[in-house]
Amino acid sequence: MVTIPNHVKHIRFLERHLSLLPGSQQEHDVNRMAVIFYSFTGLAALGIDVAKQYGSNLDWLYRHYITVKLPGWEQTISGFTGSLSVQIAGVNTVSLPNTLFALLVFKLMKDETFWNNHLNRQNVMTFVARCQSPENGSFSSTLDYKKLEPSPVDPKDLRFCYIAIAILHLLGCRNDDEFAEHINLDKLLNYILSQQCDMGGFGLYNEAHAGYTSCALSALHLLGKLDQLSDKFKERTILWLCQRQVSREGCMSLLEPNDNYDHDDHGGFQGRENKFADTCYVFWCLNSLGILESQDCELPTRLDLAEQFLLHRTQNTIIGGFSKNDQDDPDLYHTCLGIAALKLIEGSFDGVLFMPKNNSS
Ligand SMILES: [Zn+2]
Image (cartoon, rainbow, N blue to C red):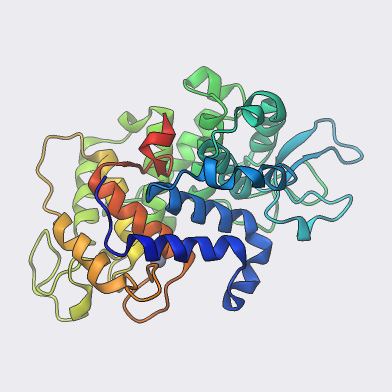
């Protein structure tokens, strides 16, 4: 394992989020599961044995596993809530993102008791299934707070499609029949394919976005359905992703003159056209390219420059952590994504399941 410069500072930065949230981050108290997930994933990627170091916190994690059956419901659901501070009797607060975050944390914790005895797979699968829109096959992040129906106020998009599929994968689904036993697989595939953009990539309203692209490709990969994409679309997507790497001269892949570059963005990746480079998009773009890479072409991306962008521009060498760009303070999300991107480049990170490779088998 290659050590990231300032390794110890990054570990301390992540550990601080686990003991007491900095005052500036207090609004994230309702997202405690996300805080635990990003901290643990970053720490595990840096080589910390979180199972050993945080094993005494398992009871606390278990309390966030909630089973709900409200009056009038014909089924029982289980999943995770983001924080016990949002628990209200008679209201469902279980969400798909918190359920995925917690399942990945339990993978990192290597807690066999949870997987074998505590977890009710059927209840969690029922919850996932109920979040699918019967109209277009996409997923909502949660249910209506009283009904067994997708939340009418939450967006339904590729992020939650990926999360739903990742949860089913972690619960053991591996082939069409196993996925189709719980969700409408055809409708989901139609929805994902409907989000392809003319220029390549995936996004809403034909505007490709690197985050949505990573979610769509990761979901298709887990479903074994990348062959549903045409070769032409894959080529356009690879080109579009390579063009997201910003350089002083222009896009790395075309070297067309670029009058609007930010000098300091050299080597970084942007999420969409005409945006500044951002730490997290190094991960989203490289993960997408990694999924499509099996074609035998040499990609024009410069991984060395992407690494330099992270280490010299967005890494905080004083207090540890990574920021979005070279202006902002470091934050937990960009720290985790920055470390994940560096480990993805190194080859030790499973970008599809978002965990270090030695935990994902
Ligand atoms: Zn970002």
